[in-house]
Image (cartoon, rainbow, N blue to C red; front, side, top):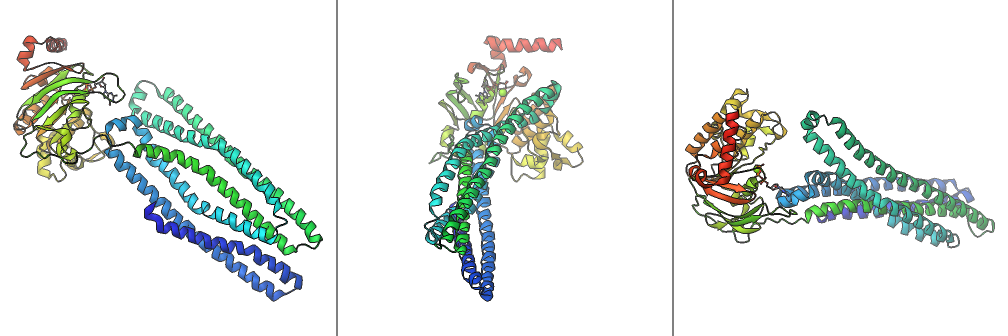
Length: 568
Ligand code: DGT
Ligand code: MG
């Protein structure tokens, strides 16, 4: 809030000025009645009346000013928090990302921030106004008629108790409402992403039911909260109206006895209403604050997730490194998992050579690749690039040298060229063409009318699996990195394209270190070394020939695939 101190100061000053004017009105009115009407002094009535109109108009102007500055502060604050959250989430470790989950992260950075922003706006407008009005009202009312003020001794505690009871019920409901919003978002997100699967498996009805349950649950809680909040107002009105009755009654008796003037009673009544109204405003605010607090807690949860993967204070710089990757006794486990995914992995992947990793599904191949660009940090052992531990380099430095093709090709909405620019910011058309050529993507890209300027929809929805994969390969190639990581990147390609791609790759990546994960033996036969990964452990390293001769697991993989091909 610090950047907005000046605006907040304006809000307070304008509110104060507005309230002073409003508090003046009943006093002016009292003098119209007690002096003007009682003496039949028409000019006096007109003069004071004009002052009253002036005061009221000025108060309106000031309130508009308050709203203006309060909105500026609240909206600006919301923007700042969203920005901070976004940057933080982009940076924090994937372990933390997995823990909160994307659905909740989305709610937190939109809905929760909005919640806080709205309440902030309300606090600025009402919560500065209500206490000032309460104090001013009490001072003026008591100084005017101490005798009548005893009524407040009854009304104020009663109101306070009622507010307390209602807010105790409402606050937990607000908290659960926020959780239910999360759940709703999760469901919508999941079924939208999986809409094809939902249809194909005839799960539309089931999804509908799942969504309806959550939706109705949300509605029920929402109704409960609204009922409570709706009951607040009439209850307050009853208290206020009975207070008025008491004031008029007692006041009438005092006027009768000659202790009090009519104008005074009218002014007192208005001050009393101001006092009670400000108390109601205060209570509404006090109920809204816990609601925002629930959101604040959820936002802070994200902001306090520390960045587990940090750049070192004194990063070491590699000079003229070729991209030698070494694993030394590396072990790793995902947060919360009982068993390590990788255990005691040691190998060297040299520049100019291809290291292939093969193994059954779930063996930990993708995990192994993710450790190299430091998407996750090792639990034990270390990974070195050109002799330097990856944790001793800046993340930028490591990642700048790596071309990573993830197992699930993820593209962004934008043109093909824009997607390739993820790999290299200032890549020119020539470089793009070259990368597409090697990735065997030229054919389908050039067939499109707009070539590299063809628009790709969100997550590459208008491309086939193989096309996405090729573009994601081209995106890695265009960087011309020292180290290539291909995670099962050739699986969606037919044998012929697979072979053509590897041949083209070979020509341009002759100096680079290539680490590729593959399912097909045909993809790995030419590799300089093949690592057989089995349940997170290395079951053998060697060339195709060596492994075929002496590695039981490799033999099994080969023979099962031969059988498959023969069958086909
Ligand atoms: P694939 O792609 O089916 O051939 O299998 P791999 O070898 O690439 O397996 P990988 O490394 O994705 O997963 C190895 C194990 O780790 C598997 O049991 C699932 C688990 N795992 C993978 N990703 C995560 C994750 O983000 N969080 C947790 N808790 N576990 C994960
Ligand atoms: Mg994998």
